[in-house]
Image (cartoon, rainbow, N blue to C red; front, side, top):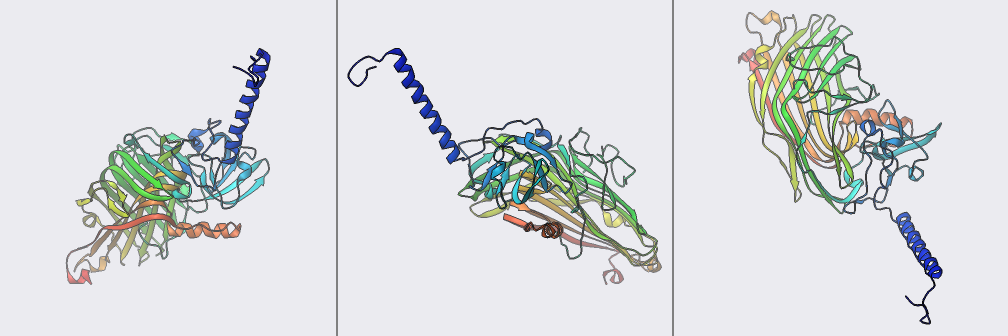
Length: 492
């Protein structure tokens, strides 16, 4: 190596020039990183991954939206989650936390991601109120697909406690929206106490998880080796209810594919395999002629981490909602019934070239007639409606506010039994079953739940959230009215 005049450089001069060159390159690289953070920085402390989710990691094949703020430290930067499951308390000194602002999208972990509705210092914490966000508001370009089906048999349980939104009046609401697991389920947050809830219609093999007290209901959610579902009971105000709803599955698995280009979904597919049956059992009574009409979103996630796909920590998550409406016309009203329908096919959808299609058409057949089982001696007509919703999501977020692919099945069963005074002529019984599929890419939150949350957000001047974002479709799979006996007096 020579200098400007052909002289050989002295060893000390060569080392000085080399060191200066290396320093210059290093400074240029650091400046480039500061100017154009196209993705998250490498995750830091992830000791709490199991509780709060895994951190994202950079990947050159993924482009994020410019208003996404990556907060460093992963779950190690999370100091807590509020009881309403909306406010994340994080370390204000975490890398990137100072860039958070209303309207930005925070991406801290696979669960702590969403639109910033409000943020404030609270003691030594930074409290960040997150709302749901569309997946294309997070990712601009990327193709994500799993290498193999993801087993749903051993999920992690995330319990939100008793958030204020875990009950709302079903007035004006509409549709469209298992046996218990014998596999151990990891309990990550607070688990409710096991108590004497209803076991109406549950097989003896079922292993029921911890009970939750929500809006006067005792609820025992079950998931996922043999399906999803819940036992529930209510006793108050002169009304007693016991019931079980199960979407029975056999060795359930999930697969998904998602291609986003230019913040537009090009192709998408979600398939939840293993559907077997729908089981419903319900018993209700009143001694005062009282009625209720409630929807209860179960504040609980059953989640299976998929792992990082191009650095994005996707998970498959199951959430549930139960609704009960009674229609007792006499003080001694009571009704009891149970039934089962077999289900063929899978739950999910495919999307390409702007068109949706279900993954596999359902084949619904009656296995045990619920109409035959209806029983309820009373001087008046008794009725009850059971509303059940199970949602499967592949994406980012927590407690139903998940961005990504979703497929939701909603079952609504209405039962009536006539007055015992008319029994000499005919004891009329009827069942109306409706099944709906709601699927798409983005997010979907029940309208009644959104109304309750927005009322709270208005109080704290934090804006509002929409019930849906992205692309989606609702299908009416099945709707049938069964009346017994088939006589004019019952049909009328």
